[in-house]
Amino acid sequence: MTENIAIITEAINARENAQAPYSKFRVGAALLTDTGKIIHGANVESASYGLSCCAERIAIFKALTEGHTVFSALAIASPGGAAPCGACRQIIAEYAPKADILLVDADNPNSIHKTTISTLLPLQFTANNLPSN
Ligand code: THU
Image (cartoon, rainbow, N blue to C red):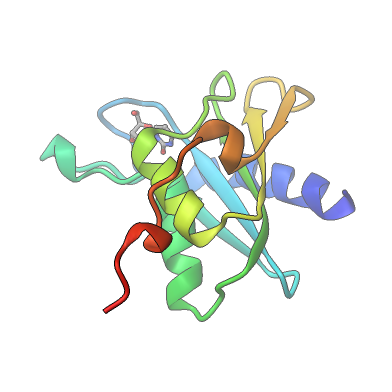
């Protein structure tokens, strides 16, 4: 729980590096690894809007490519404490299935909604659905 408080603060701070000139909706993410390391992410938007990437996926992709593969918690800070989009839910289901998910209202950091990916994304499509060949 102490670690969860740390990642809540770090997710809020990660918003400072968001590149959100189009939506102005700044999102920060902080991912806690099984070794206690915290990996940050923030949303990055493109002038070609569809290329934009959410904070959660950036944090997960950064972590994976730095050699971290097991995660115990993910804090996501945004105005109003928004829940992750469908694309991010799929990536969380595949790469951070055990993580506590903490949705943080950046304007009211005491307001935390704790959930899991099973709640956010029931009936998941994962590698288990693929035929082994
Ligand atoms: N966004 C995130 O980074 N995470 C979410 O959970 C929801 C949406 C970003 C994508 C885009 O840069 C902006 O917020 C508005 O949709």
